[in-house]
Image 1: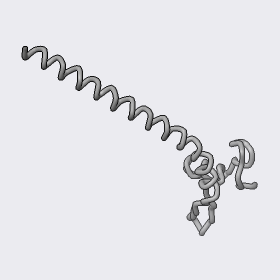
Image 2: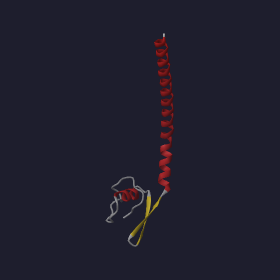
Image 3: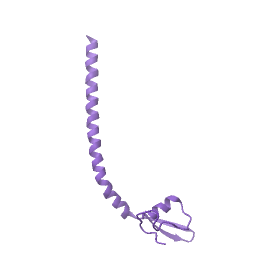
Length: 95
């Protein structure tokens, strides 16, 4: 049975070997290569799929970074306005 990269869980991902669900999913997703050594299974991380994910995530990272920067600016503005309001109230109370 082929355990190469797969777009769906059902294509080529069924195995009679007992594995942890995590390692089985990682293998089915093409994230690891598995080598059998007697009774052990040696897992090696495949960087290519993770690099593809990094490229895909980068555009969203830039989008969210901009959103967070705008949110930070708004929060700073609101904090400044709140401090000014408190100072005005204190000044009125001293009169």
